[in-house]
Length: 363
Image (cartoon, rainbow, N blue to C red; front, top):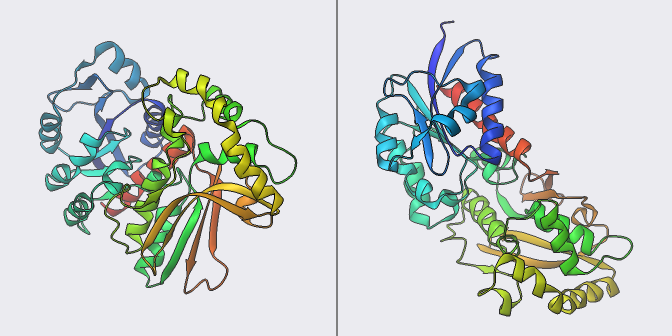
C-alpha cells in the first residue's frame, strides 16, 4: 500500500492541545500507511507555519511555536492558507473559541476536515448545527467531536451507532461534569458526612478541577452544552444550551460584580443553602447529584440538582467520574451505561486522537 500524505493543523496548544501534539508525534512514527505533516500550529496570540507548507517538527513543535511563532493571522486568512495545502487537511481545534466554532462551516466548504473537543459549535444556535452537517459528506470533508462530551469516553460514537442502526432513544441522563461530580461525591457522599460546600469548591479549585473562575463550572452551562449535543444527535431539535431549564449553583448576589477570589471569599455566607439541600436528601435516604437529562419522547431537556437513591449508579461515583445512561427500545428497562473519567487532558486528547484515526480510515 502506498503512503498517503495528510496536513495537520493544530489550533490551540494548551492543556489538551499540548497532550494531543505528543500523541500526534507518536502516531507519526507508528502509522506506516500515513505520512502526517504538521503544517500549522497556533496558540492564542501566535502561529507557526511555512509558506511552502514544509513540515514543522512535531517532537519540538510547541517550543518552536513559542520561540519562533508569528503574530496570529486572521481566521479567514488561516482558512485560506490551509485550503491551498498540497495534501488534504485535518484541522484540530483544541480551543473553546466561539469564533473558531462559527468558522467550521467555512472550513468544511473548503474541504478541510475538522476534529475537536470544542462544544461551542455543536451546542450554540441550531442553525449552526445544521450548517455543520450540511457541509460534510461520506467521502469528506469529515467532522468528529467525540471529546465534546465525556472526554475520551465513547459517548457520541455509541449514541450515533444506536441512532444510525435504527434504535429508538427514549431518555439520556447522567453526571456530565467532572468538576461537579467531584464536588457532590465529596459534599454528599453515599456514606458519612461531607464538609462545607464553600470549602469543597475552594479545594476543587486548588486541585485544578475547576475553571480559573469556579462559577464557570457552577453555572451549569458546561452540562447544558453536553445535553444539547446529545439531545440533537438523538433527534431533539434543541434550539441552544440556554433554551431549557439549567439550575445555577451560584448564589444570585455573587453572579456578577466580584472577581473569582472575591467570590470564593464570600461563598461561605451561603453554605446553609446547600447544607439544607443535603440534609433534606439525607433524611430521605438519598444523596444529591448534579444531573443532566433529555427526555427524547417528550422533547424536554433539563439540568440541575437531583436526589438519588443510594442504590443508583450515580450515587456510587468516585472522584471526578462521569456516568451517562442511554435508555432505548433495544436495551429495554435497563439502560446502557458508560462510566469513567470524564475530564483531564490525557483522556480528552485521547478522544481527539481517536477521531483523527477515524478520519484517516475514511480518507
